[in-house]
Length: 149
Image 1 (cartoon, helix red, strand yellow):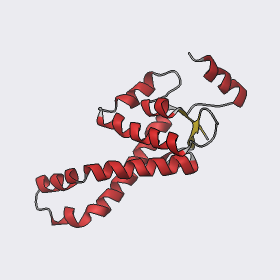
Image 2: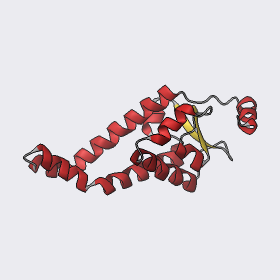
Image 3: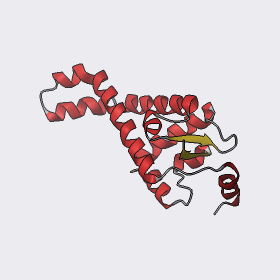
Image 4: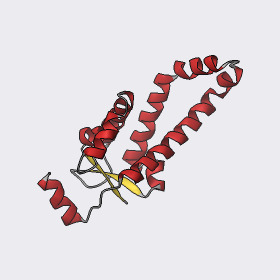
């Protein structure tokens, strides 16, 4: 256990967000981003005649989708300390050094490693379930915590 984090929790009355809250926020964000991606690709998807063609269309925009996710999470994390899903679930992200919204670099780092974790079979998210402070890989690299708002 990390004594520095334990003293922070006691001193600042910080309560970690539950895994259930974080999972729900993740689901909300993924649904929102998927709807945005479908709206962007609607013309191409509606012109596809088979399921294979639809899959080919979505796969051809994979890098763009990852870029949209990074921009979305960086902006909302830096600006509001939470994505839309986290706002709905009443949780937020704080940078450990300032106890406020993460800086641009921290938010960007967190967003990039979030996508890396997704690419690697969500191992970083599984890591959060095993970590006593519920920190995923992107929390560790961005030096952030997800707490109750």
